[in-house]
Image (tube, rainbow, N blue to C red; front, top):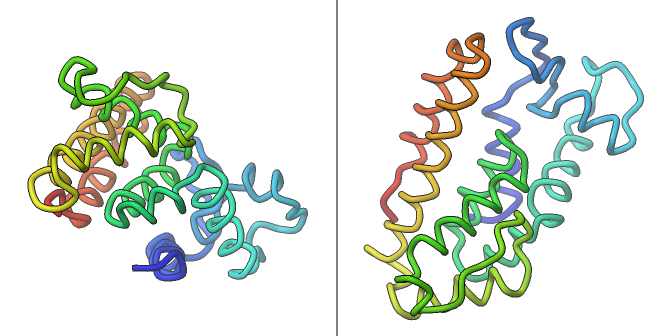
Amino acid sequence: MTIDDLVDEAIGREGGFVDDPHDAGGATRWGVTERVARANGFAGDMRLLPRETAARIYRTVYYVAPGFDRIGAISMPLAELLFDTGINMGPETAGTFLQRALNLLNAGASLYPDLKVDGACGPKTRAALESYFQRRGKTGEGLSVLLWTVHGFRTARYEAISVSRPANERFAYGWIARQVRMGIAA
């Protein structure tokens, strides 16, 4: 899968214009919130946000800027999960999930040093990921355990935000169903 495939899939899944009063994200088109669109130079009516603008935002804000493109060079299934998580929760949150998972799975820092959990998927995070895959396997169980762990953090966050804002419960089933559709095993 390529970034173009991921972007096309995200835009197709997110659909056109939505302004659900129960959604704290507010007005969106193609899954891009008004806040993100404005921060990336779009000043028009959200109902008219061009697909090309949404695609550029997805590519730059949710894939390249957080370093998921470099993660994709190591493991595309992991980059796909981080990209999807970033769209839903923010790229920094997705990055923290990866760092927390790598710290949890490093056997008490005996496989590689613990990472500072800051959401930035830079050289240290990539080095830890490479070390993880060298020791645990880049496919099969090693990859599946890492993906499962990130999915677990994501599910726990859905629960936490639904507890803190009960209106989010109306979205929880769909959020978790999305993860199930993505699959957990590599």
